[in-house]
Amino acid sequence: MAVSKTHPAEAIAAAAAAGQRVFGENRVQEAAAKFPGLRERVPDLRLHLIGALQTNKAAEAVRIADVIESLDRPRLADAIARAAEAAGRLPGLLVQVNIGEEAQKAGVAPGEADAFIEACRERFGDALLGLMAIPPAEGDPAPLFARLAAIAARHGLRHLSMGMSGDFEAAIAAGATEIRVGSAIFGAR
Ligand SMILES: *Cc1c(COP(=O)(O)O)cnc(C)c1O
Image (cartoon, rainbow, N blue to C red):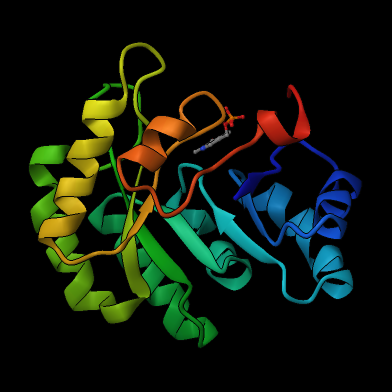
């Protein structure tokens, strides 16, 4: 995934012209401003939302996203379910796990992940694709990537979104099926 947050539509169009199809944005409003026009030019482009999602943005997120990667709490699951019913469309969903147990970071706590994943699977079925995590900026991410992979494996979830510009090699080694690369593609933000 090419993470295009803060970059203009023209930069995304250039990446699409080079063959890139999956893009990540962390703000619903920014994505909603940039992507409808891009989709007209590149119909098979795919948009993943990767930022912390407020419940009052769930309806817009459900309308525009192909995948929402930041499902991390029951109230957001409620809002997504309601919005999906109203919109008649349900994006793919990833449960975000706060794999480094950082106080300031979004994501379900690892100790609560099993129960939350089960509840999401009951509710969303096959739309629940897998897990996403952002490890702490400091320290070796490899054990945390392995921990995320282990949680996914025991739930039979195949999609693992982990790894960014600075740590994608370690994420791939640990089994990432999707890496989220921003600055290494588009330059500094
Ligand atoms: C911004 C962002 C990225 C990309 O980070 P880079 O270090 O620029 O590759 C990946 N994942 C999430 C959730 C992000 O917010």
